[in-house]
Length: 478
Image 1 (cartoon, rainbow, N blue to C red):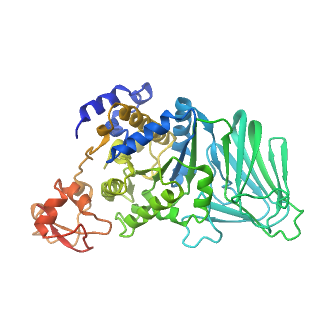
Image 2 (tube, rainbow, N blue to C red; image 1 turned 60 degrees about the vertical axis):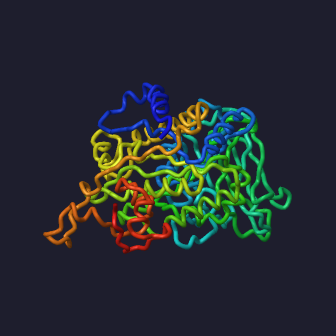
Image 3 (cartoon, rainbow, N blue to C red; image 1 turned 180 degrees about the vertical axis):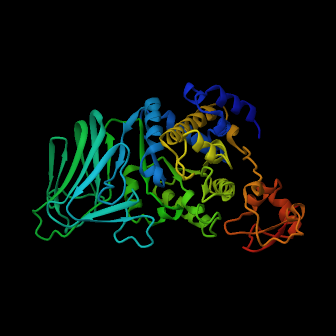
């Protein structure tokens, strides 16, 4: 906890007029507005990236669920980071219309012809998935993918990357940016690394990809998304890569991700999942920890030096029940971040913590389902993503150790849990706190934090020789 006083003073002193307008009832706690870590080299790595941002792009991948697919918080974070550090380009764009789902708030996406699709939350996707977590495949001449930006991307020099396959059976196609037409005969324009790259100078208001004839053996054209980046060096490129309804394990389905991600070379990967992992069960699946570790490994295989940011969820209420697994999930993420040398963004405590989502709804920041936020709510989350990155950078310039071992908040889970009907009338609250029955997803560190003790004390009390615990095991809590 060394240096916390200075840390909090720096953060609180930097609160903008935007934050001063936020209702106090939301219980925003800006003392958590940073990316925490347990290894000081991670803070220095972030500082080095940002200090070199004029010479080299800072590339961010942000994966998550429905709000990331719609680009609600990520649009705010992108805009603020680019205004502060420089604009490296828009990032990834996908045709959600052809995938039978809603589009980004920044552009509409429509289609013509027949396109089959797949999404990362499906157990067995019908076609391989790419970096966006979705894929569409056209199989008829004249099929189109159309994009219309609500606000044009400003005039500049851009590199366009269209992700597809290196396959001799692909349709030829033409690609139109506003009124500029680019024709691609795939026998002449060879696909390198399963993508086509070309330069374009000007404003970007609309895009169209149209399949054409010319290849007599053409059978298909898979589309995994396209990236818009500036040809000039430097600035922030923020790729919003969400899939609605996706749990954490969805990123393990991205077969084409490694080869495509290497072309974009991410410096930071934000894994912003959890809602779809705990919402319906109010519990943590026993496989989740290993799924998170595998996801981390997959991105480090792409870039061994990539900074991984793990996030906690916000408070949730489902069908009248508060999701008390929220702080347990937070503890699990915090523990894995320490174990795997990742950064940890504690959005759970920053956004108010357990029992606050109904107040967010009353104040117009959360929807009545008590799961999704409103536009104002997502604007707030996007602001704090930006502010947390900026605070981390500024604080690490002072002292990396400031963000190490920062405590999480404790919550009285019993207050928010409905009484168990199977509990006998003679069981007292004082007695039940002396033991704990291990559930799916529990870790010793999470249990220790929950009860204000330590892993060492729990192991000693129960005669444990390792950190391994089993579902159903009863632990004595010192």
